[in-house]
Length: 170
Length: 432
Image 1 (cartoon, rainbow over the protein chains, first blue to last red):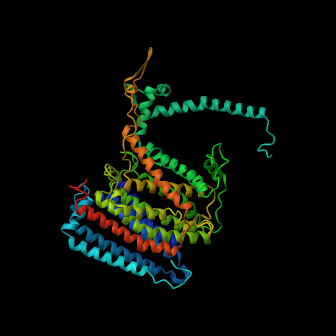
Image 2 (cartoon, each protein chain N blue to C red):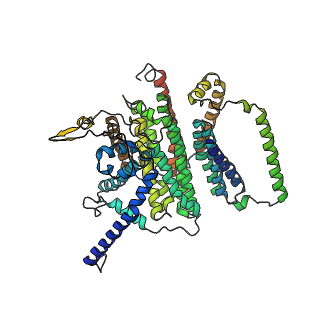
Image 3 (tube, chains in turn brown, red):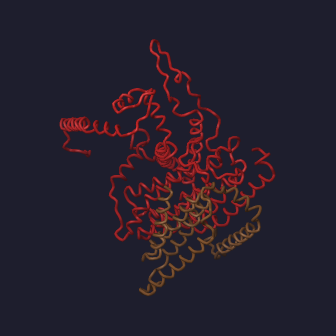
C-alpha cells in the first residue's frame, strides 16, 4: 500500500515538476508547481511527519504558490520571455540534470542512509519543540529574530503615508 | 390565468400513472429482485442472533426491528455514515440550508421587507427548494474565451475544500470525520486553498469583473489569514494541543472566550473577511462589480459555489464554537434512554422487546450535539447580523485593518495567553 502511494506521489511530484518547467502557459505551470509542492507534502505524510506536511501545504501551496500565481497573472508573458528553441541547450540541460542527480544520489548513498531503521515511531512534534527550547535555543532565538525583523519590515512597507485628501479621510 | 399544461386530461394522466406502475412492478419482479438476491449472495452477511443472515432471510429482517436495529447501529459506526450523514456532509448541508433561509428572511425583516413569501404555505419555506430546482434546470453557459478546464474544476474544488473543512469539526464526543492530532494545522492548510481556487476561477473566466473580484478576494483572504492563524495560537498555547477534539474537551468547566476575549474578537473579524460577508464583501460587491468573482458562473456551477460558501460559513462558525465557546460542553439536559426498551416492555398479553442495539445515540452524544448546534446557530446569527446593518468598507481600510490592527491585537492575545500560563492561572496547578 505504502509502496503504491509512494510510487504515485513520485509520479505526481516529478511529472508536475517537469510540467511546471515545460508548459507554455505560465498559469498552468504554476498550477503544476502546486502539484509538486503538494506531492512533497505527501512525502512528508508518508514519512510520519504530518506536522511538516501540513505546514508544507499551508505555507507553500497556500501562500507561496498563490503569490507566484498572482504575479504570473499580472504579467504579459510575451514581454519578458523569449523562448529560445535549441536542441543543444536542451540536451545539455538534461545532461547537467543527470550529473547533478547522480552526484546527489552518491552523496546520499554514502551518508549512511542504508543503516537507518525505518520502523521507529514517528517523532512527536512536542519533542521537537522541547529540544528547540532546550538544546537548540540559539537557533530558535536567531530564527525568531529573523522572523520578527521580516514581519516588522513587512509592516513598515505595508504602512504607507496616506495622501492628504479631504475626501478620503479614513 | 395561465395554465401549465393546457391539454390536460385526468383520464390520460391516470392511464399514464397506471402504465408506469405496471412497468415498474414488472421490472422489479423480473430484474430487480433477482439482482438484489445475486448481489446479496456475494456480500459477506452479518451474523444476527447466532444465525447467519442468508440472502433468503434478507427481506425478512426489514420488517423485524430486533434484526434491523443492530444493522442500523453497525452502519452508523461506519466511515460512510460519518462522511455522508451525521458529523459530515448531510448535517452541515442541513444547517447551511437553514442558514440560507434564515438569512433571507431575517434580512428582509431587518429592512422592513417581506422576503421569500410565495413558495410553500408558511412564510415561503420552500423557497430554497425552488431556487435549487431552478439552478439545476438552468443551462450552464461558459464564456467563449474562458479557460475551460480550470473554469469547470473551480466550483467542484471549492465545494471539496469546504467539505474538507467540515470534516475536521468535532460535533460531539468522538463524533468527528477526521480526528487527527494536527486538526488546527489541517484547518490552516484547508483555509489556504480558498484563495487559490478563487483567483484561478476568476482568471479562467477571462472577463473583467470576475478578475477584479478575484484579485480583491486574494488580497483580502491572504492578508486576513495571518491574523486568523495568530489569533488561534492563544488557544493552542493554553491547551497545549492542536487536536480539535481535545481543545473542545478541555473546556468542560469554562470556555476560552472568558480568558481570551481579544483572540475571539480578532478571529470573528477575520472570519467575516474570509467568508466574504458584509462589511468585507468586496470580492462580490454586487453594486460595483456585478457579482465579483461569481459573475460568469451560471446554473449549477453557481449553485455549487453557493453550497461551498455556506458549508464554509457553517465550518467557520463551528470552529469558533469549538475553540472559544466550549464546543459540545454544556449542562446535561437530554433525559437518559428509558430502561424499559433495553429489557422489554409488557403490554398486556404481549411482551415487546428487548431490542438489541437500541440506544442508537447515547446520552452524551445527543446532549453534545444539542449544545453544539445551539452555539453554532448563535454564532451563525451573529455572522449574518452585520449584513443588515453595515455598509461595505473600502479596500485600503480593509488592508490597513488586517495588516496593522488585527495582527497587533493577535499578538496581544498571544501575550495574554502566555501571561495566564506563566502566572499559574491556567495550566498545571492552576484552574485546569
